[in-house]
Image 1 (cartoon, one colour):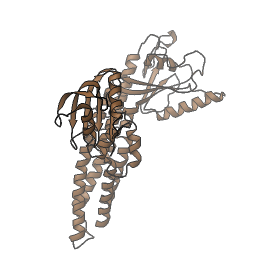
Image 2: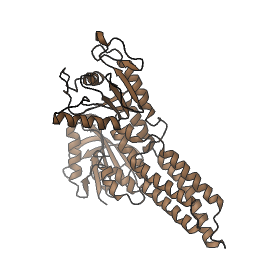
Image 3: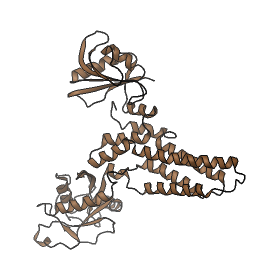
Length: 423
């Protein structure tokens, strides 16, 4: 296993920078630069010197973590040095001149933690989400996952599953009437399947990570682009009085009181002979169908949608002074009604997101939990002990894929490439 090093804090200049070394040669390499290292899990101030010339590079705080009690499960040494560019570059260059070390790849420290059993795949996914979190709700959900919330729940399921498997195998080996199945086994399989199905019904993390899709739609010249600009607080969409100005959808990622939202302006709906505009209208209709929340502008009948918000736009104009009872009167020019509209959108968006104390599944995790639930359901419906035991084995395999213990090689490169250098 190579020994790797990287800057693990933000790019300089900064008050302090953290340079991390991990691998079998971490301690000898650090000693060539810092001299005698402090005791494990202790910190000490050391002069950092170039290993060849002996020139002083910096005076830094040095920390040592011995395998396996480290973040990667390997020997780890950290230099907490001054955060100037020249200082950081000099230390990194000195480490590069040591033949037994190489610069780390993005996510390589975390990947080693996974491969050495310090974290499982669900915790690694949580760390990736935590790095990319831009809103408070995203941060809390990612933190719950990275701290092992899902891993602990899976461990409880696996413990119960192993008990069921052991009982099924005992019955196969020792019961004289193999064709009979203990009703307690069937009941517990049903209970586990129901628990997993309940987890699958929870709001998923994709909306939290990518944003709740809020689509602004309606006929031409209804005020859609002006409303999008007013909500975004900047000129994101072109606004004119010419019908059909917006020919393609425009996406604006926003955070509404900590809730991630993807606001989408669409082409005005009408019959058009213009080929380009017709394509934009077709895309608008598709976006309406897939919207999480639909803001409908215009006096025409709104499409059927489970989370429809009717907007009476241009409320500042004399002929628009009276709004229908079911619509929110809004003026993009004066700001009238914007607060009420955003509160309504925020309430609807929050109803689609996981609660702050809940663990939200991503698409991969949900897929493997669905596989395990199907295996438990098949086990409960088995007519022979051998079939029940086989279905329990399939459930164990699904949990192993869920935690990364087996069958996930195809997802590892994609996951750890999301990490920054030094993580």
